[in-house]
Length: 409
Image (cartoon, rainbow, N blue to C red; front, side, top):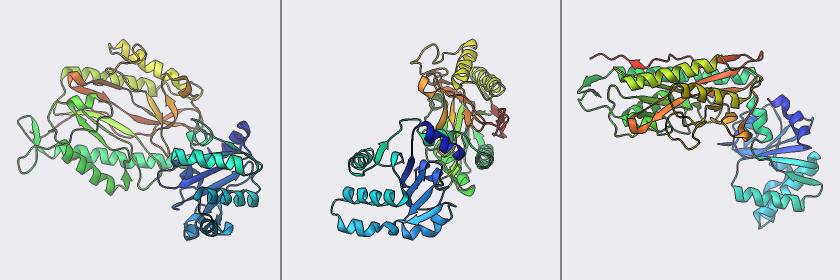
């Protein structure tokens, strides 16, 4: 949480931090600027002091809406510097020199935000060499901002829950859209008698998303049959929606234009389910119910990955625990944090660098799945879990888990 920033800065020996860049697609900037609708800017925070937001003069009013102390770049004659210096890098270094001098930024300074890697390296290298009294610090994952963002306060949890509520509406609308079609020769058909395709379903989902003011930057997964057996296959637009084939519907929904995410998956068959899909589905269903009942603060995320693997192996499926290279069975990670990015801290895997201890405020997915593309099916169920202030796990996903969607024939 943001209240942890000063503690985290002290632990990392930072006197100040700078978050910079465009706002769009820059979750560290969104986080520190409280989602202000600026084009881009700089947030500068000295340890044990309130942050300051620097924006362009044209963004001054939306910057003020951030609730932070605000200054425009005009105070430092940013345009004058750009006109005076033929080399843009030299100009930006001079701008930082003036800002740091005015705000009293000295010592070890951490830099965060999104920009081109080569540009960032050249800028930070130049700042370290040319700005006196400043030592440049850069984190590798997880960064200080990542760690702060990993735990959410009640207001953040409520925004995520609201995105989940709207996502569930879309899930229901999509299922009703499917059920509104007639059946012919084992497939869904449209009013004109032509088969319903995966591409047509994607278009309808996009309409539902727009109505709920949500977007899905990483793309909607609505795949059927063999494609459902490949975890991130979005679905072939030309495939026909057939009865009795497993369908995976997965989307990481976000407040439109940038903000908080939700992530949910349901798997289902239309009309009926073949026995092997029924078994796989029941195994995944039992696994996720077991996990949700076991989550609590104080346990390592790796523990739950091991638990999922042990459970699914006991049901006869290969997992990454027994075969690190497997592409069938349980061949993915168990989950990930959800917030201003669809994938953020904490992560659930076997990698030591991604092992975390669950804490109050963590919000993350639980998404065990089984994937058998050569057998023509895949199954995944995904809910979002919140560890509340008491350390208990609450399921934020309010949508039924039914395998078979009945149809009117």
